[in-house]
Image (cartoon, rainbow, N blue to C red; front, side, top):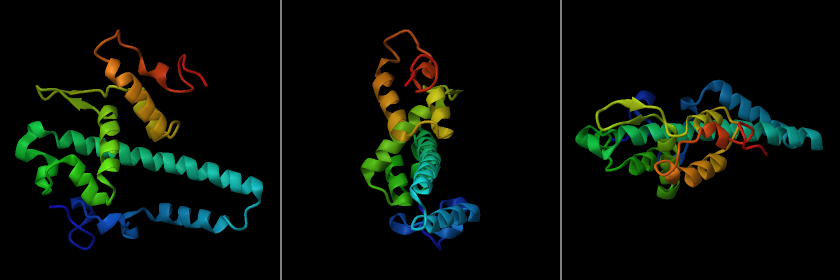
Amino acid sequence: MVHRSGEGDAASGAAAGAGAVDAALLPAGLVAFVEAQHARIDSADDAGLIELLEVAERAGRLLDSLRVLVAGEIGRRSRTSLGEESMARRHGCRTAVELVQRVTGVSAVTAQRRLRLGERLTPETTLTGETVPPAFPTVAAALREGRIGVDTATAIVTTFGPLLDRVTPVEDRDLVPGRGCARG
């Protein structure tokens, strides 16, 4: 069963309903950082506002990567091949999409997007139970580091993912902007 705020602890998957965030679940430093940035908006000059936009984008990319990679791991642990041992099933949900949706309050479409990308960027489990690296490890690292955003990672994975079984393997580092031959 998916717990809601006040019903259990953070380790058991506590989450506020409808996507509301319980500030107690966030690191105090993160909350203080965001509040400090909010306070700067009205008093910032143009250069300060541009700097604030850059800071917000960088922080947003880092948090977006966390959402995507956590969703990907939830998807991996909720594979249908696991049956009743699936993480989603153990938490009272039929699918990983339903689990992500219930915990976060996001739409099914958003949950599906996060899961689809995250599953391509997290280690995979073979039929024999062996864990293998993700299909796009360099893209995963660039997303995790905030060097690329979710849109860029999605474009790379969506464009090149279907080709993985059809062509000679390409180093995914060549697909990440600013790395290898894909400059610009």
